[in-house]
Length: 591
Ligand SMILES: Cc1cc2nc3c(=O)[nH]c(=O)nc-3n(C[C@H](O)[C@H](O)[C@H](O)COP(=O)(O)OP(=O)(O)OC[C@H]3O[C@@H](n4cnc5c(N)ncnc54)[C@H](O)[C@@H]3O)c2cc1C
Ligand SMILES: *[C@@H]1O[C@H](CO)[C@@H](O)[C@H](O)[C@H]1NC(C)=O
Ligand SMILES: *[C@@H]1O[C@H](CO)[C@@H](O)[C@H](O)[C@H]1NC(C)=O
Ligand SMILES: *[C@@H]1O[C@H](CO)[C@@H](O)[C@H](O)[C@H]1NC(C)=O
Ligand SMILES: *[C@@H]1O[C@H](CO)[C@@H](O)[C@H](O)[C@H]1NC(C)=O
Ligand SMILES: *[C@@H]1O[C@H](CO)[C@@H](O)[C@H](O)[C@H]1NC(C)=O
Ligand SMILES: *[C@@H]1O[C@H](CO)[C@@H](O)[C@H](O)[C@H]1NC(C)=O
Ligand SMILES: *[C@@H]1O[C@H](CO)[C@@H](O)[C@H](O)[C@H]1NC(C)=O
Ligand SMILES: *[C@@H]1O[C@H](CO)[C@@H](O)[C@H](O)[C@H]1NC(C)=O
Ligand SMILES: *[C@@H]1O[C@H](CO)[C@@H](O)[C@H](O)[C@H]1NC(C)=O
Ligand SMILES: *[C@@H]1O[C@H](CO)[C@@H](O)[C@H](O)[C@H]1NC(C)=O
Ligand SMILES: *[C@@H]1O[C@H](CO)[C@@H](O)[C@H](O)[C@H]1NC(C)=O
Ligand SMILES: *[C@@H]1O[C@H](CO)[C@@H](O)[C@H](O)[C@H]1NC(C)=O
Image (spheres, rainbow, N blue to C red):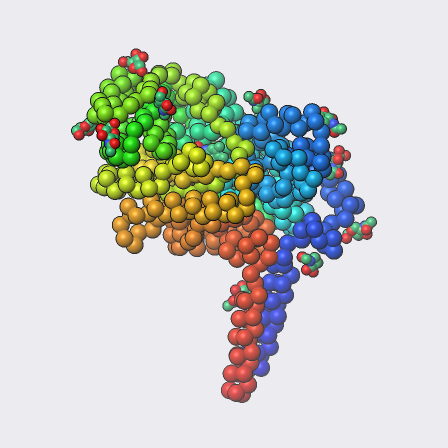
């Protein structure tokens, strides 16, 4: 009897260990010629995907010795901070630091290396290309990264020695006049958007039907990629909720290379995880069906105020924080910058009343007569698209080296402790001369706080927040490594200052899509709590048991080494062996 147990146990253990060792190996990187597929294998793969295999280059490579081309270099220099142009480059990230290569447009470097830019990429235009790429990467144990635009602030869409699945050219959009889903009655004018479509394209196309979807302030962010899966805040989120609240269905390819429909009734757990639990983690999204709404008109106000000294600036910021609940109650949204002794604000109100906007803003100015208001202007736009195209879209530069750390600030705190909130804002404020900023977004509260029929994995910090505050830092390619490390640490410290307004012991929360890769306790901060994180992780393990999809601070990444190339299995294997040996001994003693 005991013998049978022992033998059974032995077989199970050996089998388990072999599984672990066989399927959770270190990834094969391009630098390792003993495992990297040879030219023949790549050529066969290239043929199987209609010749869509391309070679990515760092965005500055054409300006350096390695691939110097004077025509291409002058285009690159002129377009360096053009986000649309950057998203068209297979090797580029929006923020140059994530390419992590020594190439630069500012200095001609002889040692321009590939850095974190993938070595090969599939420029996919069909679901078949995506399926083939997933299977090829899994079979050959490659590090696979997924990118639609490269906007990611944690560098999650690029990796050294990897194969890139680039979804940028999957650009279809279809209007579904009557969409009926499994658990909902008919929904009119849903839109099916493919993975490569960017928000400016969605807004422009929907405006022809006088419709709008809940999307990013930046037109170059992808509509249904990392933005959507990370939750997605919007100029319209106070009006209708987060972007991920609007999803009706996904069409995905899972890690086993299968195409699947994901909605509340089919693969419901995956649907829950994809709506807020992060991009690049559970499956590759080919397209998503999202709700649209009749476009609102929009009234807009801008104001810029400078104080002449720190005392009057502190008073201004306090007055502004007290102003926020007033405008929130009136349905306004806002983006604002707190830097040096200046406050700059862009307010907008969907379906707002222009005269009421003017009156409220004038009262704020009148309450701060001692300050110098450089400009207060207001405008009325007949539709969201006009506001987007004339105000938001032109103001979207990228390209520079950049880091951010954010916090979601609870509405109750802003209402009850405006003085303390203003104090921490001043502490964490930006300084133009050192390239830092404190960017506030009044894009939570309102319908973001309405959880009716919204069973998804969006960080619950969003549901009680009013503001998303982002401490940002940029620097140049010539900044020394030591200074970069210092600045990176400062970003984290400044964001942590904002935690001082929270009641003792409460969980600070960040928006994972606007966060710092070195944030401590990121599992709780990015996903809301350890319980939610573990729930997401078990869904991740169900759909991607061998961790084909790994990215920085994504769910499940804590099972991998910091470069995300090797599984941390050695401990568990040793632990299993220990248990096994112990059990053998116990059984031996008993029999
Ligand atoms: C200039 C700028 C403006 C921004 N404005 C806003 C804003 O208004 N609101 C807001 O909420 N956020 C905003 N963000 C943050 C934005 O949400 C994140 O950068 C997000 O990661 C962008 O998603 P992406 O797919 O465009 O980027 P990518 O870098 O291409 O991808 C980001 C992550 O998603 C994964 N991913 C991409 N596509 C897919 C897919 N089809 N299937 C599965 N995984 C995928 C990638 O692997 C990666 O992990 C902004 C960022 C920038 C740089
Ligand atoms: C290269 O790949 C082989 C075979 O998979 C592996 O055993 C070896 O550890 C790898 N080398 C490095 C440096 O990763
Ligand atoms: C390339 O690799 C494949 C698969 O490992 C192998 O069958 C083939 O012989 C190799 N070809 C060359 C030219 O080395
Ligand atoms: C893949 O095939 C296409 C078409 O034959 C070719 O143009 C392209 O250069 C190939 N890609 C690579 C990386 O060899
Ligand atoms: C140099 O760049 C230009 C513009 O991208 C391109 O048309 C041309 O073919 C390139 N020349 C070489 C030699 O690669
Ligand atoms: C930005 O890049 C896009 C794509 O290359 C291009 O169409 C557009 O004209 C560029 N914008 C500017 C201002 O140069
Ligand atoms: C794009 O959508 C149209 C309309 O639904 C469809 O006919 C077409 O096949 C789609 N194209 C691709 C490449 O999916
Ligand atoms: C700061 O500026 C305010 C308003 O301009 C002024 O009234 C006040 O005297 C100044 N305080 C100091 C300490 O300079
Ligand atoms: C102006 O100040 C008064 C008195 O402090 C305050 O009650 C009111 O809410 C303020 N209004 C605005 C728009 O800031
Ligand atoms: C306000 O105007 C002053 C003087 O014209 C100028 O120095 C300052 O930069 C302006 N501030 C803003 C925020 O525009
Ligand atoms: C609101 O103020 C602007 C000036 O910023 C003015 O041009 C506009 O006529 C005012 N609108 C209403 C409805 O009072
Ligand atoms: C919350 O959302 C539901 C469903 O969209 C809606 O019917 C309800 O009116 C909303 N509640 C509030 C207070 O806005
Ligand atoms: C034992 O090994 C299995 C699979 O090989 C693994 O899933 C499990 O986590 C390990 N057990 C412990 C206690 O580490």
